Image (cartoon, rainbow, N blue to C red; front, side):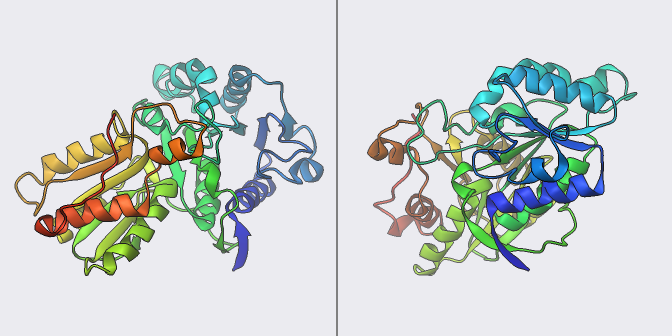
Amino acid sequence: MAQMTYAQAGCLALRQEMERDANVWALGEDVGPEGGVAGQYLGLQKRFGASRIVDTPISESMIMSAAIGSALLGMRPVAELRYADFALCAADEIINQAAKIRYMLDGQVRVPMVIRQPIGMRWGMAAQHSQSNENIWVGTPGLVVVASATPADNHGLLKAAIRSDDPVVFMEHKELWLETGEVDEAAEPIEIGKASVRRYGCDITLLSWSKTANTCLAAADLLAMQGVSAEVIDLRTLWPWDRETVFKSTQKTGRILIAHESPRVGGFGGELLAEIAEVFWGQLKAQPMRIGSPRIPVPYSKPLEDICRISPEIIASTAALLCHPAASSSVVIAPAL
């Protein structure tokens, strides 16, 4: 096991897959000598050459078009779109081409590619560089959607995404890039579609993904001080999502709270909640609930940005309300604007 950052773990995964398979290559803005925004590609161009780590002009639609064409010819491209916000510049290529080609051509071809989209707020980056828009891609048939929360998962899931025969939207949280953790450098790919139970508990299930899964762990510590035992599930793959693990936990605890950084309105948490409510209608000990950011552009000002953040205190106080409604008169719940 080695200690490394989340960004270094992703870089290691890409290097290992490029060594394993000559068809793997990467393209995007500043992925060459610059090594990407947080060093996700640092040293790779020197190791593999400019024909496999390709610096591109600032054109997301071109990056995606080149990657799709390459995938159709049997390559396994990793398309770096810098931020999830910028992926919208390539929405037609992702939604109408990459996601649909296999279906449109009756399975005669596949599009094995990774679309890297860093999500989330990061230190005052404001409205056009802070979005978590995973609901767009989850709602697009034909796409696999992955969101890692730890260095080890970033390593194992990126390897799995590169080996997938379908287009994978791979969402890395920008504020996790410098987070460190243990990574097994020889680890096999993590199974796509399999959630991780990060903490076991019996009173309530906290369900999340990406950085907010880590926030749920911190909230579970706060709840433990109140005598509440929280089970924390990191979904890891948003589509397909692990119904078996989520349903098993929900059945055990009888309570569920879903938390995510993207806006509560129209967020993927609502879809999860709807399906859970359909399955467990009349069986839960409290109403299923969700927490998300308010429906506003993420502000540049730190005090205003903090309004959009889902804190451990917000998660813990909401969970406490579900577990002990009479004792939680001053619960703090994120606004749904």
